[in-house]
Each structure stands twice: as C-alpha cells, then as structure tokens.
Image 1 (cartoon, rainbow, N blue to C red):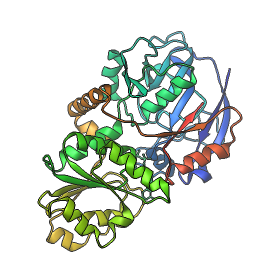
Image 2: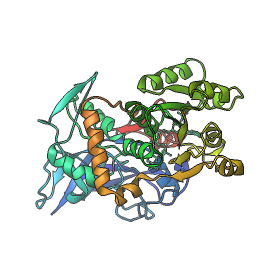
Image 3: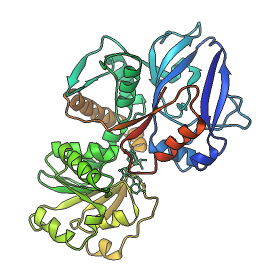
Image 4: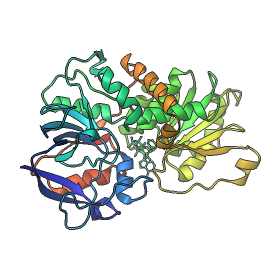
Length: 400
Ligand code: NDP
C-alpha cells in the first residue's frame, strides 16, 4: 500500500477556507491502473478559479479518496513517476515519467492511481535536445509530440515543471516536453483580431504574466512595436522588471500609474510618430479601470481583446469610445478556440515549438514550493492563495 496526501476541497470557495490536506492509502494497481508519484506540479490562475467555482470547466466532487464529504482535487498539470503498473497496462512501466493527458486530473497530491489512458509517457532519455543559453531545452519524442500537440492541455508552466522534476531526480537538464497554452493564446490574439503590419503598435497590461511575456516575444519577432503595461513596484524591483521586459522585446514598458498620468498621451504621440503609426490592438489581462486607461491611446477602429480578469473588476466603456472611436471589445478563450480549430492549433503549436527549439523563446520564471510528507497544510494553502495575489517573483510550482 502507498500512503498519499492530497489537497482536496468539498465545495467551491476561498482556498484558505475550503482546502484541506487529506491522507489516505492506495492499494496495489490492478488491470489497467497505474500508481503515480508526483514530481512537480505548477499552480496556475485557472486552477484557483476552479477552486472558487468561477471557471467554465470544473472537476466533479467524488468519494474516490474516502474523504468525509465528496471532494475534488485541484491542479491540472504535473510530471509524475510511475511507481507500479497493473498487469494489463501496456503504455507505461515502473520508473517511467508521465504527464496528464487531459485537464482535471487533480495534480496537487503526493501520489495517485489512475487508468493508464489518462496519462502519456514522456521520454526521459535519448531525445533530441538542444542547449539554449544556459537552459537545456528539448522536445518530446516524435510519438509523444504528435499525441500531445492535439490532445493535451498545457500551459507555459509545463516546461519549467518538467525541468524542475528532472533536476530533483538528479538528472542533468537534458530533455523535456512542452506545448504551451499561454504562447498559443498570445499568438492567436496578435494574429486573429486586427491586421498588424510591420511597425504598427499594440499595447497590453499584465505584461509580465505568462501570456504577456509570450506576446512580447512574438510581437517583436513579427516586427510590431509594443507598449507593455505593468503594475508599479517599489525601488529597484520596478526598474528590474522594466529591463527584463525590454530585453524580451517590449518597445516601451510603462507602469499603470505612468499610463494614467496626463503626459502619457503626448508621450504616446511622440512614440507613434503623431499617430501615423497606429496602435491597433490592446490585450487585456487585468480588466477594470486599468483596462479602460489602456483603451484611451488606441487608434480609431482598434480592438481590445480581453483574456483575463486579474483585477476582478468590470470595465466601464465610455460611449464616446464606441461612437467616435469605433473601438471594438472582444474576448478570447484558448480552450474554446482550440476545440473549434484543431488543425490551426496544431500549426500554431508546431510553429511555436520550432521557435522554442531554435531558442527564440524564454520561459516564465518559477518559484518552487517544497512539498514532502511533513509539509503542513498551511504552507501549501499559502502558496495556493498567493497564486492570485500578484507581485510574485514567478509562477508557483509544487516540488515533491
Ligand atoms: P501569471 O500568474 O503568469 O500572471 C498573472 C498576472 O496578473 C501578472 O502580470 C500580475 O501582475 C497580474 N495581476 C495579478 N493580480 C492582479 C491584480 N489584482 N490587478 C492587476 N493585475 C494583477 O498568469 P498567466 O499568464 O498564467 O494568466 C494570466 C491571466 O490570463 C489569468 O487570468 C489566466 O486565467 C488568463 N489566461 C487566459 C487564457 C484564455 O484563453 N483566455 C489562457 C491563459 C491564461 P503583478 O506581477 O503586478 O502582480
């Protein structure tokens, strides 16, 4: 029997109120079941929204772990090691590494037992790999790649998650798989809403988010100028972040305070050659007043695409923006887009992968949260709570 600990929640709500740490044991796997040990699992904003019950897709509450009430396990991504496999299991064996094939597996736990078809093996050894800067980046085997690109849901946190797992296991970072949702989101939003020509401008808030960082890099690659809006930080932190985003490819980096100052309009005029180079697109991660401030410098007929709502505030659109400037307000959800455009999704992912292979893409910074048998619930819940709290040094990842 394997002893396991799992974060669980019996109802939707605030992480600190609904999450508990549940201990249970897992029997030996029979037929097509596999027992897995978690190596690393990232914390994404959407995971928190699922706990809150505000995300469009929600895992069901069940009795499978023997919790006092039917419960769900949070988390959608992870890298696991196979501890044992049932006699009917064909695709993986003890010692293999696997990742979740679909969303909703519930990954914030030390161990789990699932049907083999819910996971896909990733190669640990013998894959093509390339050294990119100081970090080794490589790709899944051709087999996994084909399966993965179309069927799996990944965010940009998967690559670092796998790299961390590899490091923990004492391996040199050599190979791992990654297909990203955040870069796909950034890619489609830059391409599908307005036609940006070379030299045109676009603007975004939450520019240091995973999606924002991907958009900066893609926009730069395609010859567009960008204004990256971030929240201000005290002292050197702010300057450091500015430099970081400029190095990624942002043309200008401003804080939301600077954007709301009077002189900002003139500043933008100067940058855009008195408006002759239009600002055609805004990508909105934040919502609320911050989003509306970003709408002001947009050119006539421009489009604002909302993909996140980090401020949790609604947007109040002034009538003049619609009547006199004919601004368009749209939204984007990559899951829905991917379902509707499987072929296009594959092409997008392939193109992104090619860029990544050539080392033309930088990862989002990660912050490791250690989770061993003795880790208190409070430590874990604090990390979960922090995911939506902002001003973080990087994306959280549980490391086991
Ligand atoms: P990250 O965790 O990488 O980044 C979060 C960002 O939100 C940071 O820029 C952070 O800024 C900002 N932020 C946090 N709290 C606030 C706040 N109260 N007010 C303003 N800004 C805040 O996130 P991801 O890139 O993974 O996701 C960003 C958003 O995009 C999420 O809402 C996510 O759900 C959404 N998303 C949507 C997709 C879609 O298809 N629509 C696809 C992928 C992601 P700071 O550092 O200053 O705190």
